[in-house]
Length: 172
Image 1: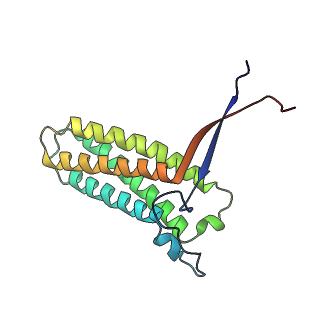
Image 2: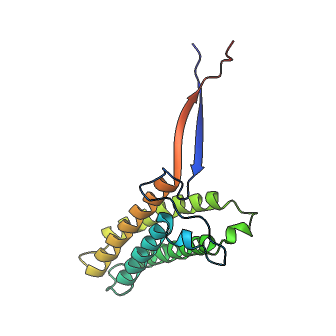
Image 3: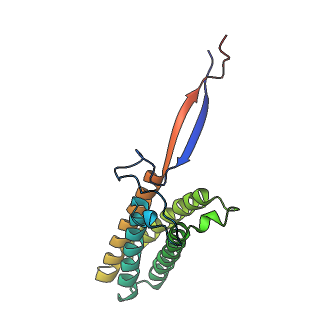
């Protein structure tokens, strides 16, 4: 009895046809800005993530603090995540990935989303558990959970991870 080797294949699909329910982005336009990317599902998802992170940050920042460390942790995580999403947005919008070829941009973005989503989920859970009926913390944690969902959705739509069993026996 031979067991097949497990192979994990990953592929980045930044708006490739058939990768999501969004229509394929138009062909790249000449110029400084990539208008096709700005209208793509990936870009709109990044904008939605940034908006929900900013609203969550503002809600927590303007609330009465019941637990200082939980509030500061949530604020730090949301601002770091927001800045990194903004950096990736500008890298793709201004086509900086063409000039900075020493960086694997899909891998860097995948690692950012994996780590950032996990930290954002932890921060939202901490903010929820320490809210003590503070409306600002509850609202901030709600937008934190929304941003966590949007980040997870971005990982799901951008990176298809599939496990395929391949036979190691040579066909004769």
